[in-house]
Length: 254
Image (cartoon, rainbow, N blue to C red; front, side):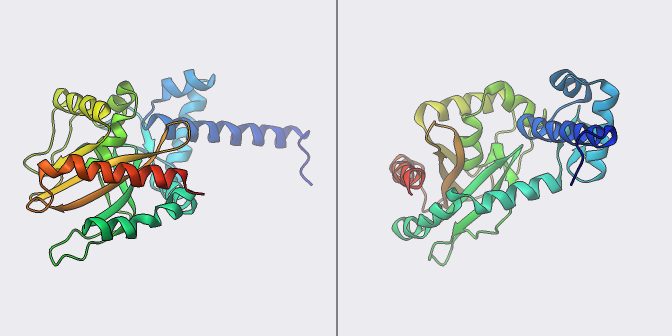
């Protein structure tokens, strides 16, 4: 049995607690610096730095010299994906098969992971020319329909700290300027769904809506993707309505 009253044990437990608090903070903020960590958790800067460096050496956080602070590392991301794969939202979203059959296109389930969206699940359409579903694939959130719909539901200030200062472009139509992205996210908030018009890849369109829990928090995004010639812009509102119905059914499923 562990003696929690032993000084060394108590100190060890306190250190573990602080490290866990730092991990939670990194997860929530997406990126955080030493000074901010120390202020938020009420610890010294030297302690905050030591914990972050230790977590970095273990792969739980990453530190990019070009950025101001620390962001979620591969081990933290991997653990999150493993946990998500066991959540009800993924099991309930096996309704994707029915939705793909109805729309005759590829339907996917994505989660937001800091500045990217990761593909959790998907069902490919039966068309000869169709979008594939490489599970675990990560894409810049700001150039995809599922990423944009999840970003739109975040506090704008948090979006600013989560995404890189210089937005990357993956296609000619990618939104790579902050003012344009902020306008786009505001429009998505108002209409409730997001579109990707060749912003992620040439000749590829996408539509996405968020799956929310009972108190309105976004859990994931459900999306449909297809060649631009089949998924036309004028058809997107109707497709978004179908996705909204599916998202509500997934959220309310027992």
